[in-house]
Image 1 (cartoon, one colour):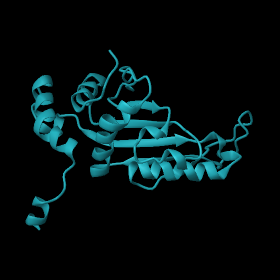
Image 2 (cartoon, rainbow, N blue to C red):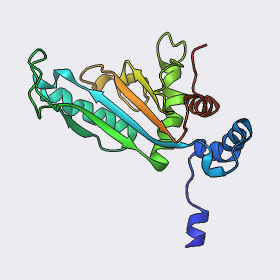
Image 3 (cartoon, rainbow, N blue to C red):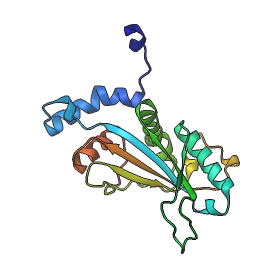
Length: 188
């Protein structure tokens, strides 16, 4: 069993975090215990599909796209209440989401930072003020085609997606430092 764990796959970004980023954070903020060092907890990728109320095929395509991007099957989300202005009924399927943890989370963050974000048109960096006050970061992507896994010819419709990065940091300053050291391109 010990031999099996010795050869277990460790994502590239997780190795960088353990060897370089965690010690830097420990010295920067003066943590006494390694358990105080901020780390990634989970990443939630969601896609709202408002047109799903008329065309179920678009929702199925969105679920397939999110599944291809994250490597994990997406769950369809339902509306919590009826909204007459938007012609939405309670319980109607209007989007999809995936919660990533562990190896898949580290791989997704690595691909997002190093492959997908540089492919965004007119990219000037991500918003440095999109923290929620508890060390979590949310960002919106305007198109799913920035990920190389998506075949441009086979997509039904270009749709945006939301990425929420949940960290164990207590403050936004600690979380921003963690993400910046990982390579998050914050706008100056």
